[in-house]
Image: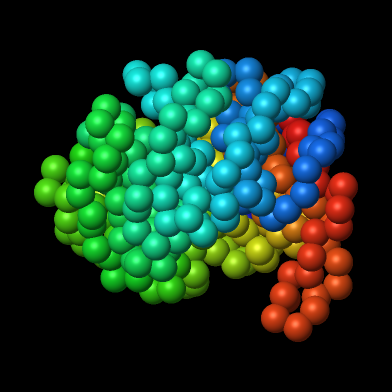
Length: 332
C-alpha cells in the first residue's frame, strides 16, 4: 500500500505532539500546610512571600514556602477574594455578607478602611490598564469599579446575570463569567459598559476564568468542561474534558499550562499546544472539596484550600466544616 508524504508528515507531527506532552513536568502534591482557624473558604492569592487565604470571617496570611502564620486580617464577613495594588501599597478584600470591600495596608496588613459595593461582592481583580479595582457583585448583578487612589466606587456597571470571575486583556476590555446565563460578558472599561455577551455552550454555569493575552484565548471552567473562547470574537474554540466541581482556573504563560481545581478531588492540567489546540497533560488526585486555587508564577507552585466536611444536613448540602481540618495543599 502506498503511503502519501502528507500522511507520513501528519503521523510524525502527532507523534511529536504526544512526546512533547509526555515530557511535560508531572505535578505532585508535595506539602500540606495546616491553618489553625475554622470556617468556609474561597479564593487564595500570592503576594511576595505570603499567601493570603479567604477563610470564614477573616483572611489568614501565611508564608508561602513554610506555611508559618504571618497574621490574620479580621472582620471580613463572608470573605471571597483578595487583590493587590502595589502602586498604592494596598490590598482589597471582598466581604460577601458585609456588601463591602476591606482595604488594608500591604506593608503591615492593617485594615485602613472599607468601601461599600453592590450586594454580595465576590471575585475581585486589579486592572493595570485602567488602574481600577473591579469587583463582581453576585446578588446585585453588577461590577463595582473602584479608584484605589481615592478608595471609592467611581462606576457601577450593570450585567445580565450573576458575575462569577473577571479577567482583563490589559488593553481596555474586561471579560466576566456570567454564571446563571452560561455566558461571558465583554466590558469596555473606557465606556464602563457591556459591549458584547457571548454564549459558551456546551459549557454551563462557568465559575473560574483565566486568559492567555498572547493568543487572546479565555479559559472558562464549567462542570465537566474547560471551555476555550476566542477573546476577539467570542467563538468557542474547544471544550476540554475536566472533572466536575471546577471552581478555580489558573494559567501559566511560561509553560502554557491551564489548571482547573475540581471539587471532586482532582487537579486537571491542560496544555495549550496552540491557540486552537488543547490537550489534557495530567489529572492529579488531590483532596475532595479542593475546588479553589491560585498559582505562584515565580515558583510554578499551585495552592489549593480544603477542609474535611461533615455529612449534609437539611439545607446545608455541603455539610459543615470539621473543626481543625482546614489546610492548604501545595502542588509543584
